Length: 176
Image (cartoon, rainbow, N blue to C red; front, side, top):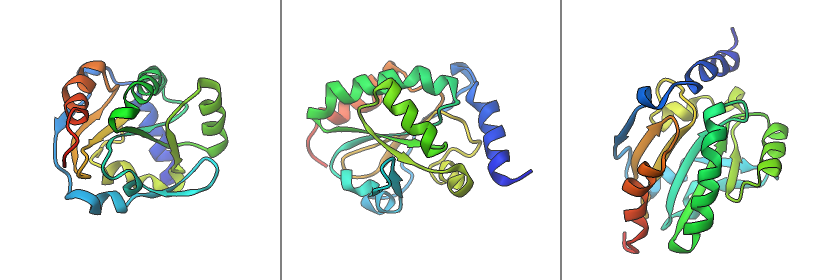
């Protein structure tokens, strides 16, 4: 089985896990801006972006795919967070692990209001592992503080409770 097919098959299996089996943890994966500069992907208009262009913002980095049911449940919440907290320094950045055409259609249909970057699973399947998701669960979310440090990661649906506990306090401070 090709690596990309294995990745998609694993994603299909793990994508459907329940909240009770999802993992979440407070973590510092790396130091500051260095880890942000390591992620460079194109948006859906094929324009390149580095994650460090949002340095100084609180970032919700969310890995998802159009075929992932829990991702579809989670996205309206991410849209709401982006709308409600953009003025406080929040940036939701979605990393779509799917074909660009499918991502574009989904973004347009659902009205996603945050930056979506494209990571073709054939070339970027290592991304989840690089960001701490060793089993390939989708959705997968990493919260990054204003200093560029990943401080929380969660496999499974990112809940309002997790937002209130791990993101809101970061938005209430403007210092690094």
